[in-house]
Structure formats: C-alpha cells, structure tokens
Image (tube, rainbow, N blue to C red; front, side, top):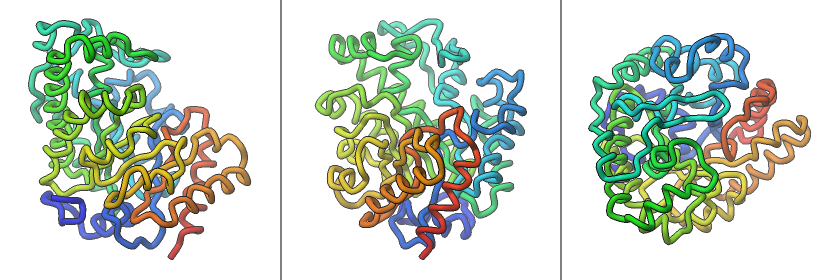
Length: 355
C-alpha cells in the first residue's frame, strides 16, 4: 500500500486532508507545509524548563512530559506537523541494552556488539516494552486535532553504528570493519535491527501516528556500492514492514547526496534532502514518484531575517517543479537557534506559497 491510499489505521479526515499529508501524497496543497527536525528541543526555553533535572532517556518514558514537549513547537511556531519526542536509541534501551545518553557526548553503549555472541543482546521488541509510547501518542493525538503526528525511528545502519562503536564516531572504523570483514555477522546484525525498528514504528502507527520518518543519520559515511549491498536491504525491510498501514514513510540522512536515489529505492514515499544538494538537482537524482523534504541550511537562521528569507526563496524556487514538497531544514534545529526565527520562517513559507 502506498501513501496515496487511505490509511489502514484510524485517522481523522482533517488530519488525512492536512497540507502535510497532502504534500507527502504528492497532491495539491493550500500552502507548502513546514516542520523542523528537532523542533521540540533545546532551542525552546519552555523545553529547557520542563526538562530541567530530568535525564534524556527518562524524559522519553514519561507520557505527560513527552506530550508537553511534542506540543510546544506546534503551539509556538504553527508548524504543519508535530514529531514525536523521543530518541533513536529508545527501542534499544527498551529491550535491555545497557546504554545511556551522556550530556555533550550522546548515546554510550556499555557492551558494544563486536561478536556473534553479542547478538544475543538484541531480543524482539514488544508493544509492552514501550507502553509509554502508546500512552503518549494517545494523549497527543487527542490534543493535536487536525495536526498530523510524525513517528520516527533510527535506521538499522545508524543504530548498528552506535552499537558496534559503543558511542558516537566520526570514522565508524569498528562498524565498517565488521561490514567489510565479517559480512555475515553484519547482515545478521542489521536484520535484527530492522525487525526491532519495524516493531517500534508499528507501535507508533497503531497508536495514532499519521506518518513515520526513518533517520539514517550516519549513512552519509558510506559509498553508494556499500550502501546498496550492505545497508539498503535492512532499510527496505523496515519500510516494507509498515507499508500496509498506508501512512507516508519518510527517509532522511545527512551527507547522503550520493545516496539519494538508493534511499528512495529503499521504499520511502518522501525522501529528505540535506542542505548540500538543491532540491531540483535532488529530484533529478531520485527520479519521479517521490515527494521531497527539505532543505534550508540550519545555520542560515543565525544570519538575520533578510538573509533567511532570501535563502528560503532559493529553496522554494528549487522546489517549484516538485510533485510534492515538505519544507524543512537540511538537518535538525541547532540548540542556540532563536525560536522567533523559526516562527517567522514558518509564517514566511506559508505566506509566500499560499495557493
């Protein structure tokens, strides 16, 4: 089932007919819809206030707090979609992986996966493991009304990179060593992670998420041939596992200009593009039949209103011939971004693209 078909899960008509959902389905829209990766986060003073003293992973497991944080940018910025507040390592934590998110560092894994015996750490994810996600999405969909909620998960490659490296990496030497040196173990690792990721997305969709995004944050470290052979099958398995729900599926990675066609081939309805490739060039690389999401450089927001509007016009002009366009940044909102700059940006895109 494609995103152009009616969803198999309950969804209000208003949500289904929203600008965001229409753009994902490549249908005419009243204006170009806008949302921002990391729109709920450290750039908002109200976020910092409610998160004060609460560790990141704990905050992801408290439904009332998740609901409040997810709603904050919708209230403040008038974005066209909310994204569920969580972290890509939440499903790993939920199945018992010993990890923590350390401030200023990121996810750190106590026992990295380096051998076949280590795969035993990766058991199946059940809905009961993440019951707080179901509860939070139930609360959110009641509050959001006609505003769609985007669920998300980390892609198998990015999760594998954290698990094998033991934490963030710039070179991925351990992960790539496994990929090149023990391809059978690597394939089994990614296959297990694809099942866990698919299960996590299914929980979110069945609870009421209107769309899902797969973040392959570190896929840009791969050559196209390696991505096609060693990564694409696992991501494709995730997308296929949730295809029957009929909700839009978004695929995003950073530094993936050389991988855009392959990322589209993995099964997404919408391909996210970072700021390095103009959208008119991106659509040439990806080919027809996909909506695109992106792709203003997040650092432009520090340059002042006139510069922001000029660079935004460049993005919108490059997107003029697309079948479907969801405006977003080319990566997440940076923590020191002025929230008012984001609010003004949403209003500017809505006004300039009003049909």
